[in-house]
Image: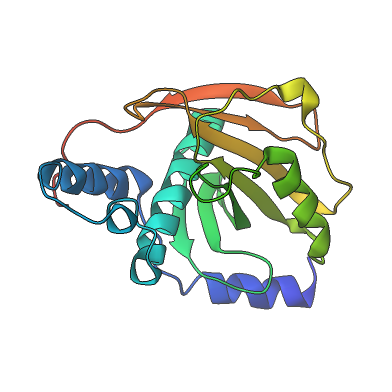
Length: 199
């Protein structure tokens, strides 16, 4: 491990990491409370500048839930934007804590950009310097038929490339697919449904 990596890890050790299950349960509870309230669509979908952090936190939590389904380990996250990543995950492998910087990308709803696609988003990864430490997570936030065989994997230096999105209208069921740079597989997982209790 390089000196730069050690400095980076020391910085990440100071971050406040969140439990994705708790965050998602709290957000779902808020959604239910506001279900009958008349809100601007941008506010409801967390698409204002003021609410961007909440949207990214939700997307990060959903990614961590998918990674937990794959690894069988609890995966935490901290929003921490840097040059080539948006949040950092943390999970325990045997006696070691593993930090992973994650670059978050989105296939936005059709109402925001009808031409957005998985392949277009993946090709944008080539603009970044790339790092064996950084993972790319692409969330699909629109209804679409995803043909895994037609995904074009860019030639980039990354720690992994993952795609995830909802499988159901009520967003109760989700999938995660990857790592695209190695023999990819698909896993399914569920959005936490019980109301959260404060720790």
